[in-house]
Length: 208
Ligand SMILES: [Zn+2]
Image (cartoon, rainbow, N blue to C red; front, side, top):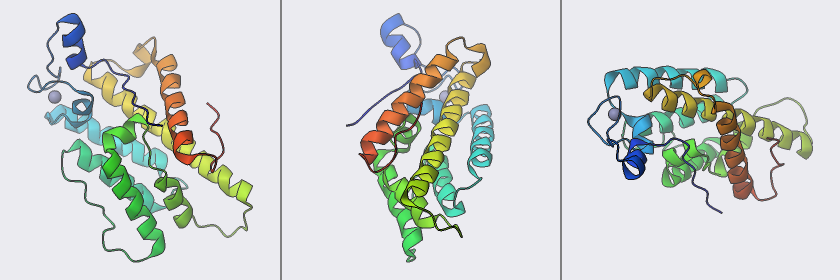
């Protein structure tokens, strides 16, 4: 099952339906597509993006294997800078790092714009498990709970990243948007459905 969900009405869509300018409101040079919202190279857009990526890093950093978080950030940064997404772990031989490398490659194939929209490769959970270190002897149920918690955190933080990038380009903050909460829930539900479809029955359902 493949889902595609774009919550922002881009100016390309607005042109189609309302005959408005298709240009990005920030740079006024390129048409505003979903990807352009995240990849606009105008200096203020880049500054804002750096800040939101830094917030994403801070929010995700607790409890996540550092190499895994780094791979996710590298993918997002390369995508937003319109650069080729080369895996930071190319050439690795350690099975745990190879797991991240394979997740990175599959996500690059799916697309990092797709990642932001909730098309998350199943291989990220395998990479998480391959790199998760604990001294406890965990049962399969406890292990699934940890993966579930990580996925929820990732979904929530990607939603915030998505929200701040899209609302900022329109000069509004999420709190100023009356529909932000319901839109957020919609986004999380789409994520959850997408993740369930990717994982089949191997991973417990997300509560949304
Ligand atoms: Zn732009």
